[in-house]
Length: 52
Image (cartoon, rainbow, N blue to C red; front, side):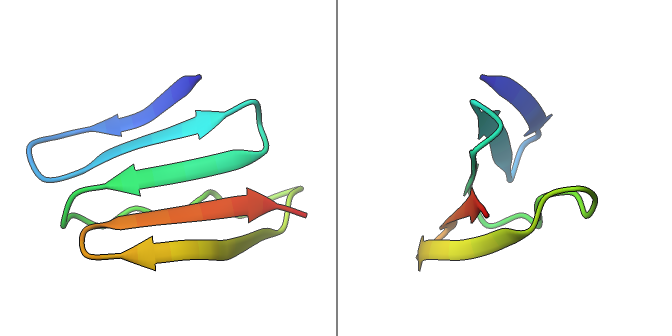
């Protein structure tokens, strides 16, 4: 697990370079680069992306 952001209003982490999760009302999206990320789940104050 790699912590991408840990702030008062958002916590985000990358898991096994395959999943990115964001918890909290703050903004975070996976980095653009060599992987294409698709938003697979979202709800109130959380989002989960999967790498293609």
